[in-house]
Image (cartoon, rainbow, N blue to C red; front, side, top):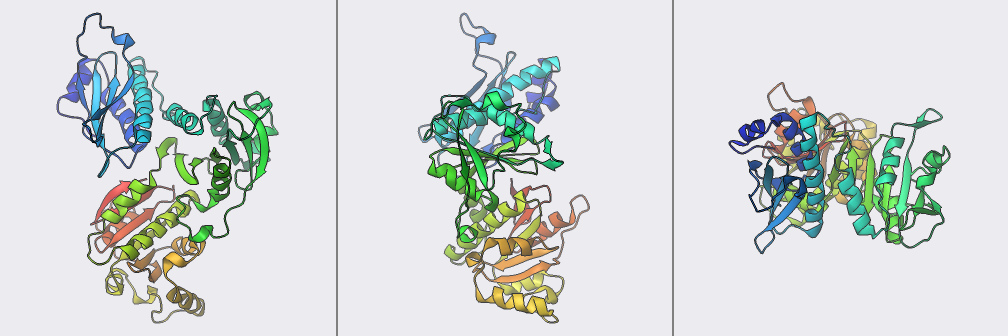
Length: 438
């Protein structure tokens, strides 16, 4: 997040603290990682007859041009206007992007204005925008904001000394009788579902309507499903009910699924929309080496899903794709780490034979996720061969980054690296720089 020249001075002139404003705008941009923002600029409100700043819309989005490739995101504050141009890597922005950005801008403007009185809190930032988007997509008659807050509050609760997981499906297909909100204080309601094997369903008016079982598809491990493996059952059942699923994980994270895909996540207190098509387009586009791209795309899409699995089970890992075996050999510290390398143990040789017989994107990704969780990197070729796992790789210089980050930077000099931190953050590296953080 950057300010245009002179913006800090204008903010200070209106008694805003630039660092407070920056915190809010950074949170806005991080909620939509598939989009790019120009530096934020500040300007005075247009003077019009009868103008009253208190009656201005708080958040605003203006399409720029007929091709709809840019949106001007505007925060109408009482003292001035903050604005930035927002766009994708390529192509037009969607109506969903537009609606969500307006919601984010509205909340951001209210927070920035509240900073003048010291009442700014980022704890709920993005929650209203997500709730409104859920209501719009599922065509609900009630505001799901209260249900989201209830589920989030469960992340701070325990049942028999264990963290709580939870699952809800919001759907118009069933009619209920009893208000879900009336049971928020009920101890049993907090433990009726785990979100993985069972879920509660609410109708369009927020009434409890059913209690359903969840089953992941048998071939989930090899599907390009745009979701972590653990949320597959909820995603499938929610789609079957033409609804939206909301899950709380025992890690305290929340996931929202729609049309079988993960749509939103709340982790470390920050909401994020997952536009998988845009994320994968940037990942594939970051590959600079030549050669056929069809097989490469399959490998990268598959490893993206492995990264989702690693991220939401908090195990961390480093996934690397290189053009061929020679590049992998240059990257590893010891040739013993290579599949079918010298001095491999009995167990490793047995696994090596399995890995050598099948392309990586045809394997159950639960197996690959376990291999990627080992210390070191899992390295694959662009045509899908597993070349190494648990491999110590050469590292980039510098002491400010951690060991896994330095390894990702060095590895991306020979291909593409996907780093998953132990806190769940996914970072995409190419040409020795981070091209996206999720």
